[in-house]
Image (cartoon, rainbow, N blue to C red):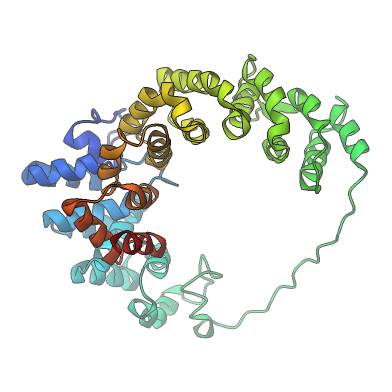
Length: 411
């Protein structure tokens, strides 16, 4: 990540107001409301720049919209960002303003509707509105949207809102779809032989691997070939698994655990990581030390993408994985990759439900909807927490599954 001057920046310490807000933790919410002036400054700072580790999966829009409402912040900075020259900045503003409108902000609603009629990133805005708002909030924008197209095809013509407006678009000749031919694959023994032959081309090996992975039963003989099923990375990042290896191995389930222990102890990075993934999903309690060692290595190296897979595996063992508790708690506190935080929460709760109570309480205000959902289902309710669960039950921003879970808890 870089700031506006392209100089490297790092996340603030996780226990500070800014650090907790950057990571989307519920702690940031609590600290912001405890010192509203400092909270307002920190929230506005986070709105101005990208704080997600992975903008494709990390959530912030709900969290930021809630905070803007709770702190009574003006929406003008978001409106200016919506109309600014940077598409990614505009996208963040679109998502936050769309949630603010659902929370009752008429100015946020009008700012987005105006942007559809006049703004630069109007098609992206329409996609956000169609996926977020009730239909009657955006359906009347159809004539304005078609006018702005000027006879061109919409960018996402096969998605909403264009599906609802199909009759408003100029008629186009339909393009006949290519007919899919059913291909009967070769025998399993020939596919295995092709994978074992070093002279088989890369494309043929990948094709053979995917064909095997689609068979009703993946042959166990594939396991002995796995260490050779790699190729040199095209971007210079080194050797990696052939496409389809993990899926094929995963379908073998517990049968793959034995070889996976050998892979996980080896020196080949891609094979070691494949072994760890198999052990996380199908290993036994004897594999806990290996999984904990993987977590410790990730923590030392500052790896944020992937430890959730190990955490999900450790959750299966409950109290038998107690030695992983301190590491999991540090990942939960430190990770900027908020998408992974629900996995650490679930693992800590499975390992020691008593000490996870404070994490469950904080997670009712987490930026990640999966964290909020898990907390709603498991947090011990008292007066304050019951009020928060009731707020989530009644919030138009939350998904139906979370609202239903909240209603069930409150019964």
